[in-house]
Image (cartoon, rainbow, N blue to C red):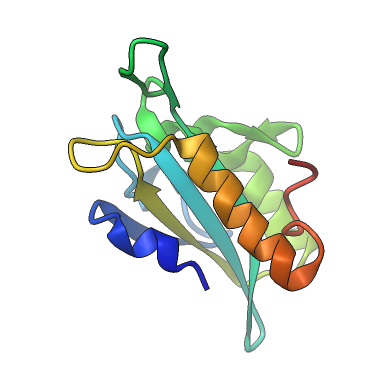
Length: 141
């Protein structure tokens, strides 16, 4: 669905369930800037539920990565009123999700110079074009 992401060679994914510790499960880079896409595994279905980004570009063209990079954004970033390492467990239980499958892509590195927010916007736009709504956990864009 998102052919735009094929060019990012620094990428990966990991699974997270209620029994896991997010800080141990997460394999995203601690100094990277880019986007992440979260899928819920529920029954025999897979649903894209969230698209996010981490990192910015400064006026002088240099990368401004969050301290701790994409990793820290995923583990300690706030969502649903608490750090994701806590709030995601609550959502997994309340929504009867078996696991989350989290994909990450470094979009701003030595090879690619794509602003994370811009790539996030493109991917959200593609999703919106197909489904007419935002992913379930994205409240607005």
